[in-house]
Image 1: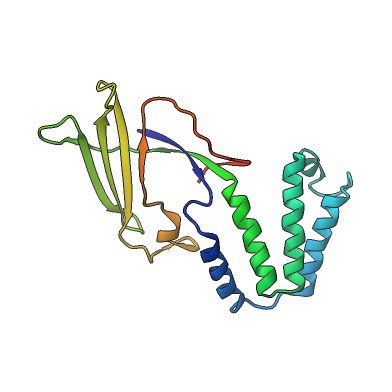
Image 2 (image 1 turned 90 degrees about the horizontal axis):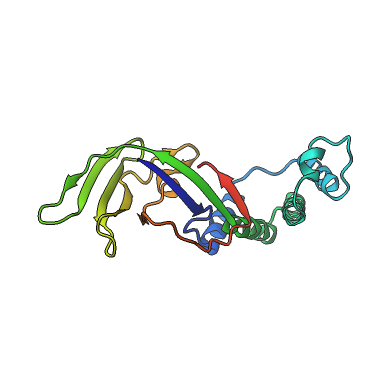
Length: 202
């Protein structure tokens, strides 16, 4: 099976929870060096007044105006935080990143194989695999006939992380793998996604 998905980068994150995490990290982070702030300030200047001799000039010149404004706002807020790393500037930076993620959609594909068994007395086929991988992921899936067009099937999938505290790269499994139930229908459909940015991959 090949599964195509379009999902919001922010997922089910909540702003206040993200701010709380960022403020907790602020208390344990090492002090920022002055030269680091200078580098960000130079980046802001390059965005405001780009020159053909600047590194990344071609990429910056090809950016859409809204994207360039978002980049400038983010970099300027980063400079502000770099010079004054306190709760207020961290909150502003976290909020800005959160809002951008909320406007970013991720497009990805995933190829996999599953074995289904017919549920007795019905036209539904079910699959239960796992736990797999470092996170101990259990995949529960089923194929159900469409209510209006019973010759066509819809695919419903839910993943359960059995080891949520395990590390997946630099993050916890519970924060990386989505555990909600998702329905993939056979028909094409329009979805209002509010995507200002599109990222390909996972």
